[in-house]
Image 1 (cartoon, chains in turn brown, purple):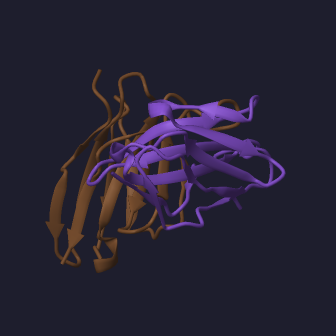
Image 2 (image 1 turned 90 degrees about the vertical axis):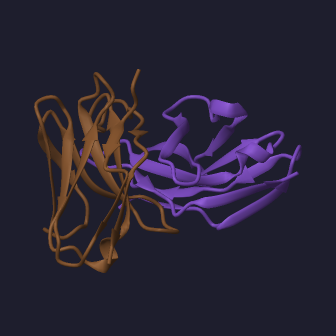
Length: 117
Length: 115
């Protein structure tokens, strides 16, 4: 079975540009989460989606947005890129949204490494 | 708010020796606890989790972790380290009783196993 797939794997942008990152979850998983991992730090939560609805948002500016499609794939969009947005962006899927009953573990993709010049 | 502390940036251990990677957590209620491993230029791989029940949790690749509620700790252990265990290890926590809380990660501990 295919794991979580992300594209592109690497990309370089300049300040002020826009970027779209894509994620396909494991088949049967309906929840997708996005994390930002800056070099030397742990992953920081950006968004969680379940059944195409946003179920959680981390402490990121409005330049960051996301959506989930009917096939449960997801896009993360970042506008007006800053140098500080350079990071590994991780997508993770799970069987159910992480609420209350049952802590479905997250399965991570390999990430999209974004460099902003 | 929930948080995780991994007090050691780096842990060095000789191959064949036991290893421990430390983690303490803070949540308002009861925790779900996880360990993940990250190899260079890769995503995170799930190792093990604690939900409830036995305080000693066994996971992948011979790793285990011990939940200690009184010390709010969830240390990762392995009886005999391998060079291939060298990687970045992350502890993560989620509050069991709060809706829509994400998984919160520590900053990571780099494990180096020396042959």
